[in-house]
Amino acid sequence: MTDTASSPAPYGPQERFAAELRELRRQTLTKPTLDALARSMECARSNVSMILNGRRFPSWEHMCALVEALGGKPADWRDRWLTARREIEEAGRAGEAPPVPLPPPLPLDALAGGETLPGVHWYKDNREFYEAAAERVRGAGSEIRVTYTRRYPPDQTSTNASREYFRAVQDWAAADSEDERSVRRIIGVPERDAVPDKDVLAWVRRHHGETEGILNYEAAVMRWTAAADGLNMALIDDSVAFLAFSGGSKQRLNGFSVEHPRFMGYFAAYFDQLWVALPSLAHYLDELPG
Image 1 (cartoon, rainbow, N blue to C red):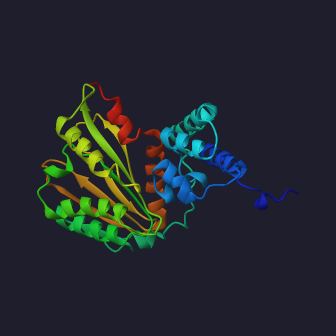
Image 2: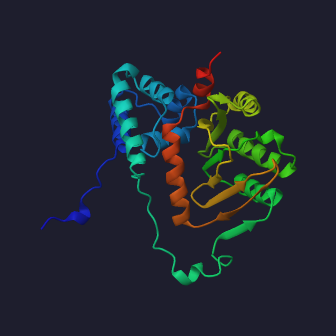
């Protein structure tokens, strides 16, 4: 009888591509360190580590820089990069996001009453939500994943709490620290008839200028055609997920946070599925007409 319990899990396209990059690194005479590769790629050391470990699929720009730093030719890697990206996107459309280790389901009696669910905190307004999220951001250990998909840019909100939250994310990414840090932000840019909203686009340009020099910070853009705000979230390390609900006036926002690995796993897989399919902020701006 075959011992299926000891059989290795089959590689997915992301893991397979990472293994090929690791093999290229092994074939180099000097075997560059992660720090040296990060400098060549102009990104965070943690980003390089996640790419080589198969936890993150590289953008085209990062792939080219990494292959060149390892002595390879990006042109030789174009087809395999495109093939891996296509397989990842198709798996996402089929609902086959990378598996996330999950604990057993909560017993039904733990869900009774809603308000008493362990690890859940409710925030009644904009100030409460952003103050709590900013506090957790400042104490983050290694990774922050955030989205912003609203019909208005962040600088059109009037609360100090929201401004402090956005500042806290950038300050955390830019901090002089020996920790491996990574901030990834997905920005939804509202469009009508393929024309980006002028206020959000103006903010996006300013935001790019403010963050392009922060090696631990990356942003991607999702073209947003719905005439409504999206569901926004902040995923901090692998410990807590903040979900924000907005609509109506610019200032209206509330939400909740959940500290539970099962809940966190669902949203982390969803975020990563979006991330690999979206262009970087720099690429999006370069491709705009005019």
